[in-house]
Image (cartoon, rainbow, N blue to C red):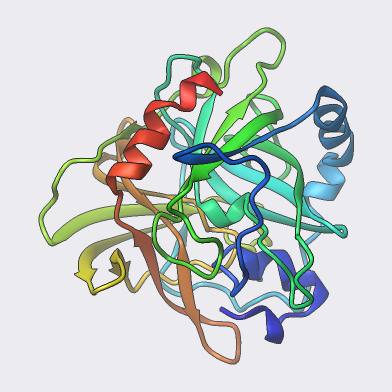
Length: 301
């Protein structure tokens, strides 16, 4: 998906599939890039993301067509899954999908790197991602577990930015709400970094901002994911057709519909779109050793 074909309303949705931009790091360490959010900016994020603003895309005729393979998730949103909201300065709102994963702090959500890494625009100006909040269990404007502002987020230094599909992963540390950690109130999904077979039966979840629901409902695809490698990267691929906004959504194996639990082995990174805005396939970066280290340190953010 390329931003040059996007309208203003679709800019952030295009970012949800990895626009062709260059990374603009905030603060670099040897093995990860960390952005720390001030208390004032966290308060500004909560003030910005009112229920009305979260629903701003509903009914927009310029959104991509409704999914044909992806289906609205029936029943309660699975543990730890939710909608991630952000603003890409200079002021374009957008959303992705994220998942709470086990951590020492109980405050960590996992998503795609490009959901929090804005890169540079065509004039080489940094696109800063601000006003980041996570709403686990989001459903048609409802925030059953609360709205959690990000206090920091990070990606591996091996991630080259939104133009890259390699290591397109990020961790987000969230403030507790009302004294409660997000993992305690919303639950978690397991995550694994071990070797997997070349084809994995997967359940892919996300909040696509398409005409089907404008991001207001969780959608799912139950499809086989196949691993493909080249000289640059290794990805998981599927014909799931979830639109932009599903980026960062979990790819779960061994998923149990009765409990809503599975094991995260990738997240939605990129999608191929037709000129009509129809998604024809999705891919997610295979987890690497740098991403494993990023996750293992996330509880310290």
